Structure formats: structure tokens, C-alpha cells
Length: 281
Image (cartoon, rainbow, N blue to C red; front, side, top):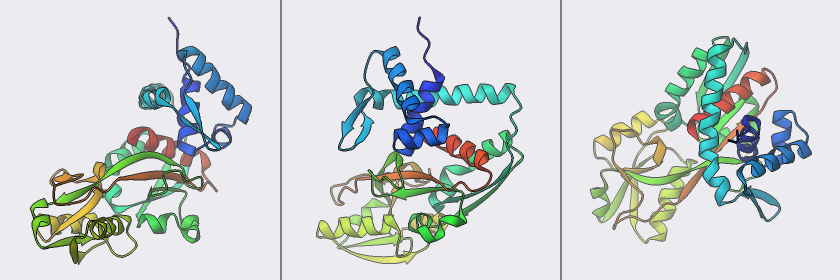
């Protein structure tokens, strides 16, 4: 019986997360030929190619896409066992920037687990619009950024996972002559996608309430003030959603990027980035 290489699986996941063999090598401390060799050995173990050429880039083929979530799961199990039986010392400060919907819906449990495993890491979390998080002028405020990204093939901010955009709230409101929206302020990707989709569908709309915080938007949605748009994985459990209805247009996919700006405490930043990617992906 063959045994899959954990190093090979980690290399595969890293290549996909950072968007290239060279960048993966920088993160893993390997040369680009060494990264290519690890992928080749993994392909030989499995008996199939995992990547295909797309323009100037190597992207996962159908077998790679099938393997990726299983590889992440195996790495999660492996790392959990290692962390349980070893006392790896990770110290430093990590400034994490995330959109408010991730802060409220997804990250509390993840961050709690990370802090439990690495109690000597000082973690600072701030919420901003994705537009601001990816702004070059603001990147020095964060060591790690989790942000929405509409450019699914971005080389500057590689997308490590995609999510479906959905309409959220009392969708019977969409049957009215004018669709009422509750949204984040100007600059929000969700807001712009909602407006563009409604305009292209020839539907009238008006924004009745704006709030940058998901808690405020959720309260407005529960009161029936209007509907909004969110990434499917971030929708609060108390709200209903649909990707498409007879009255509303489809919104498409959104990318999620995990961007590192490692100055100090690089080991702690890498650990948190890997932790988030494995848990979210």
C-alpha cells in the first residue's frame, strides 16, 4: 500500500494558496525546481497529473480539484496530531485584517482554536471593507489580510477559495415594484454587485439603510427593511438566502484572498495563514 507524502500535499496546497510554484517555494523554503519535483512525485504516487496550463499559469485540473479539499483535510489532521504531541514554540504579534462578516460569522471559533494552540502569539484583529484591506497604502497596518477579491485570477492577491454570492433576507420583498436594499457603505463589493445585478436586470431599487457592521445589517434584515447580498459561507444562521429567485438575478462567484505582509513575527504569521486556509478551505 502506498503512503502519500505529507510534504507533497502541503506543497500542493501552498502552490494553490499563493498562486504559483515560485511563491510557494519562497514560503516553504524550497527552490522552484524542488517544488516542481515534490508535485511530480505526488503525481507519480497518484498516477495522474494534477495541474494544467492556463495561459502562463499552472492551475489545478479536474484531478487536482478533487484532491485539494482532501489534501487540506489530511494536513489538518496531521498538524493537529503534531501540535497535540509537541510543544512547538510560536511567539510574536500578528495584526489580522478581515471584513466584518468574516469576523462575525466564521472566524471566532478559528481564532479561539489558534490562540489555544499558540498562547504566546499576541493577536490583533481589525475589521475593514475588503477594498481598504487590499489597499497598498493600508497594507502596512496588517501582517495578514483575509479579504474578498473579485479578480479570481489575481496574481497580486491570489484567490485560495471561491464562494457563491447570494441574496439574503425576506426575498418576498423582491416582488415589490422597487427592491429595497440594506447594504454596507459605498466601496463595499456586495453593495456594488447587488446594484449592478439589479440594473442589468432592469429592476428598480433604493437603498434604505447602510451600516458597515454585519450585526447592524442583520438587525435591519430581521426587521424586514430590505434585502442584501453576502457570500454564502458568511450568512448568519438566523437569515434565509438564495442564489437566484424568479424575481432576482444571479450574482455569481466571489474570490477570497489571504495576503501576507511579513515584516516581523513571520513564523507566527505563516502559522495563522496556514491555520485559516486549512479551516476555511
